[in-house]
Length: 420
Image (cartoon, rainbow, N blue to C red):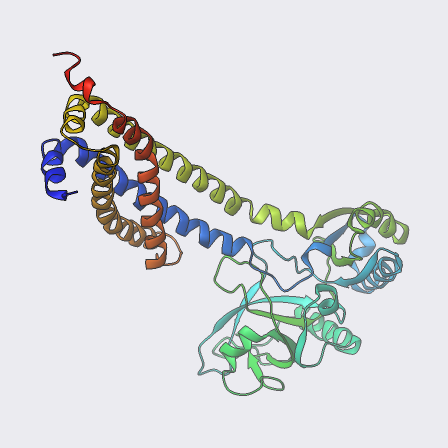
């Protein structure tokens, strides 16, 4: 079948076919960008933290007893709390820390190797000797904190915080300390790009030295800044009268509900002058990722609706063309055209319109993607995604054309002269 006569026939209805081509172009542009956003969102939804997320909960005990203002009294209760928690049959590990995975933020600061180096931001959290085992992260270099590290560093930092530190003319503290630190491999690669970081030091703005004693393999906790993979842990007891004391608890798999019900009673048996807040990490993670999950669902709905509307447009246009050209089809059949010839005519006609729309849609897709990337973070659209989108639209267009085209192919020669 020659394409020339089909093109000439289409040119006599430029507006009709032009609008359908624009509809296909807009569908490709919007759908391709929606799919790109969905891929980015699903990547974030499936991103691992490196922790035993499904078995973790954070328990915060906030006192209303004035005795908790004394650090010695508070430390004693912390030790008793941890002993009671670890004695529960459903608890695998328990640690004293303010670190809450998947909260979308936390604590951060900046360190540098020396006064001449660039400051590099990292998340930072106090930890005891049980934190790594509780989280389920793997230490790949150096050592873990010891109980002695935690006790000695807690007293040292409290002594510094309790007094006004003398500072030099530049504002740096004159009295400084050296703090043991465990950092993530990703942060180590930034601060110490050459060789092993274990034993090396970096400093904060006060001039305190932080010495790397260990490196964890993988860490991810979402943050407002792009520091999700960077962390520095330091040994210190966590807790205050105002903010309470937090415990990260790792339960035996399958025991989350049982421990959740028992943990308040367990801590109350140690000291009942506190209120409690219990958050499971699966719930925290679900809340944090709720926006991404909703985005995926909404974009999926947009894709389905757009493709459906475009399919309806193709079906409607082809049906109208068949009805409009019934006599022409009957005449062609009378002159020897077969049903397959009529069917091919409408399929080729649709293929031409769809191809024009796809060609225009590729340009619109790239332009829309660049506009989106100028406003939000995301990945540049790939040629593979556009190719898949084009193939799917070609297939959808041909399928949408098939039924009305088959109806047109069934027109008999007698229908051409029925109304003459």
